[in-house]
Structures are given as C-alpha cells and as structure tokens.
Image (cartoon, rainbow, N blue to C red; front, side, top):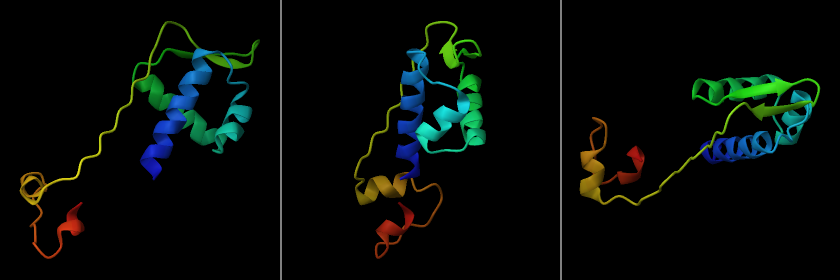
Length: 102
C-alpha cells in the first residue's frame, strides 16, 4: 500500500530529524530506499505543511529550528451498503458490484 508506505516514511524522517540523526541527504535517501530527488520532494512537502526544517552542513544532518510534531492518523472502516450510497461521490451504486466503488 503506497499510502501506508508514505506515512511510515514521513514518521521515520520526522524521528530522524527530531533527533538530528539524518546524515547527508544521499545517506538518508539510501536509508529510506528512495532517490535523493524524491527525498527533496518529501522534505519540501513537509516544509509546505509548516515543518521548520533546516540542514547543517557542519553536522551533516537535517534538524528542526523549533519544536515540531507530526501526527498522522488513518482510520479504516467497513461501510454498510447505505453508508456507501451516501458517500459514493456521485457514482451509481449497484447491488451486484459493491466492491467496484470502494
């Protein structure tokens, strides 16, 4: 699941930044099994969400310039047919294919 992988990646990045243990960008990207370019994109996304992230060339680590927390939550719920019809975003719900629109 890409979403859960992304959430896990964000949590790992946050933990390492919070502890100032990221290492150089290339090392962090390798550690996360992503490209350095992808790492920069994720860091930019975090910055757009208000994360005060800076990089220290001397210490070779990312760090937060002020206290910052990341809270991500995903809830998964099995929907009843009536609930599915109420949130189907305009799609026609068919009794024979309830999984088609999940």
